[in-house]
Length: 115
Length: 113
Image 1 (cartoon, each protein chain N blue to C red):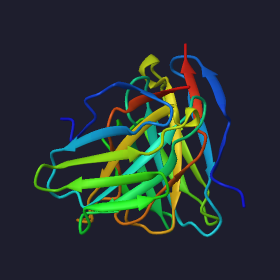
Image 2 (cartoon, rainbow over the protein chains, first blue to last red):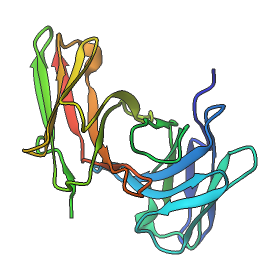
Image 3 (cartoon, rainbow over the protein chains, first blue to last red):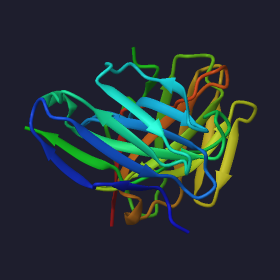
């Protein structure tokens, strides 16, 4: 069975540009969450979507947006990129909407470098 | 405001011995805890979890202990193997309307052959 797949795996963008990251969850999982991991830190929550609805949002600026499609895949969009947006962006899928009492499974991540 | 703390950035253990990784939390609303392992250039891999109604959960070589009064959990790996060398993240979540994990900063485990 395919796990969580993310594309692209690596990306280099220039400051001020826009980026779209994509995620396909595990088959049967309806919840997708996005996390940002900068070097030396743990993943930081950005968004969670369940059944195409936003269920949670972390402390990130409005430049960050996301959506979930009818097939439960998801996109994370970041506008007006800053150098500080350089990070590993992780997508996680889970069966339930709540992150309590259920484990989430992560993709391999997209390494975004902003220059 | 670091709600989940892993105070040891790194740990070295001899192969075959026990590895003990520690995690502290401050939010008493957390009721579910997880450990993830991460290799370079890969996403975190789920290892083991524990609900706050338990104080121990075991899965093969991995055991997680939860001390709610101390707001402390630990991951024991016995016996440690060189393939266990990775960064280990502790994560916590609350069932009270939140939809996210809060992660610690990670502990890099090195198992020496």
